[in-house]
Amino acid sequence: MADYDAVIIGAGLSGLCSGALLTHHGLKVLLLEKRSYVGGRAASIKHGKHILDDGPHMPDESGDLEKLFKTLGLEYPELLPYPMGDGWINGEWISMREAFPLQEAREVLQEFAAISDEALNDYNDISVADWCKTRKNTEEWSTMFRYFAQLLLVGNKFEDLSMGELIFLLRIPLLQGKRLSQVGGTVSGGLTSLTEPLRDIIENNGGEIRLSCPVNDIVIDDGKVRGVEIETGDPLFPSQVLETEVIEAPVVICTLPIWDLFKVVSEDEFPGWYQDWIRDSGKRVSHIWSLIYAVEEPLWDIRTFRWVPRLPRTGTFGIFFQHQTYGDDADETQVNVVIQGNYRDLPDLNQWQCAKTRREVRRILKCLEEDAVELIPGLVEATKWRIGQASVFGLTEAPGNTAFHRPSMRVPAVENLYLLSDSIREARGLGMQSIAKASLELGELLNPMKNV
Image 1: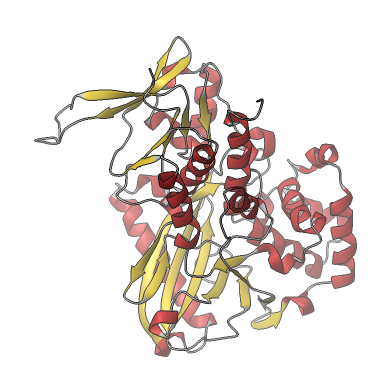
Image 2: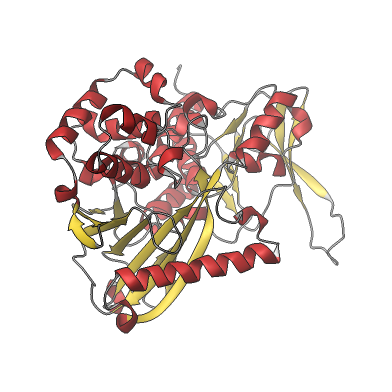
């Protein structure tokens, strides 16, 4: 008899969302997490009296996380929006309302809202830059859609971002009757306000979370999942091969990014074309780089989000925002300076073991700091401490790399193995909300009460 109804590999946001839903549906669930804490990239920690997130995260109000929390009977945490935006245009900060041709923008956004899902496919493999040329090749027009694309899509270069993906994401708030200012905000009290209630649901419903417990292999017999294999005991020396044990379960959910799938299951279980697809996806990722500064007082209106289309030293677009609650206990404010790196232009952070990569990371963060000092008056004098971060962010949303170009949560040739992360096609959507969207779909698929 199986030990569990489902084993989930990873206790990041994907694992917590799916685990909470499945235990809510009455399934016996085990989450295995290689780290010593839950949350993954959605983890928050206390640093002195500050809250720090593992990388910058800005959930929107598109509704899937809210629906998931409502399904579980949880109160959704407060989301603090940024209703105003500034852009660094022609050497000065100006309101994006002044930079945009607003009436034309409204007309085009109405067009987007009216596009059918089927017609949207025609735009998926067209870049935003090329689409702009077919409409109005003016500086204002390009500025407006560069702003939308760089803020909403994963990736850096204007010419490498998918127009279909941008339209898809813009339609979400438009079809819900919301303003574009509701497309991003920060969670009051940090991301633990999202992750800890989900953890509580899992454990209160009889689920189990094992930390510091990496998965050695997914066990498959005759094309059907039988469970997972974990190592037992502590190694006496680095080269020791430990004994293993199998945890049996009829369903396994892998929440690793799709390019890490073969770290927990042999690629030989899949057809050759699928092996190539998974391997190739890991080459087209975007990296996120950020600096967090602690300052005594906000350096500009704390509700205003700032965007730079091209930073002078790093050469990428940049976003500047100030967390609205993360430094409250210290009576201070956090200033965040963030860039995304294109996989072709900046060092591959999956090669962190290489000295060249580590050297380049520090060089880029130094350039980013020089950009921040130039564009944020008073930053140097106000700074109490600074932290730099660099990590893999996600699959670049470029033509040929979105929608049905991405693998599904269902894998070929293996029954009852599912993928769940923001890099699968069912997670098409806005950031963390996309994970909730895919989790809700998988939860319904595996709900034992659905057909009762």
